[in-house]
Length: 234
Image 1 (spheres, helix red, strand yellow):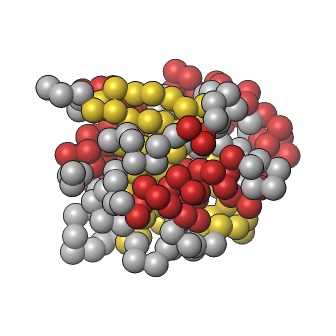
Image 2 (cartoon, rainbow, N blue to C red):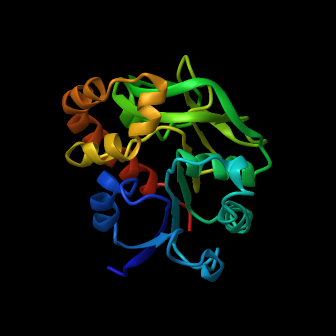
């Protein structure tokens, strides 16, 4: 098998590919992490990798004045999406894709942090999120975005209408976190301790729910990614 390449843009160490690493490896991809805090994004060839994944992080798309790499990521995504190359965005990554496609990104009505199922959109076309039907997924965001022109809405929740969207088979944006590994979940609780305290959210409840739902999500998330990879158009 000819190995393919995936570049994953990472903003904080614990928000990595998680449960997605194994299905990527099984599908013939070699993974390279690009850490924005350590490596210059200007060196990235937007068209170079077979798959580009933009991961989550605790900043907003509109924080570009304080974090200049945000503008660089959007420029990378604009070039890549214009070429219709396989691109996946998770949480902040989905928001960056939405911005690259010209949509507005802004604070939502309330923070959505916790475990709950998605409401999958019923359409005639195959919903690539089918593996997550009735599965409790992890939500961890305060921002939302308008649905970009030409994109298909795939999932919603009562708190956030735009939970997932696609633009053809090669682009997928996920506002939630299907990639989280329960064995590493404590990193999330520590890393976001201030946000949880400010929002009055119990780390113990999140920890308990992760133990209850995490393994199911890991399997469903891996199935989601495997199915999506199989439908990519070269």
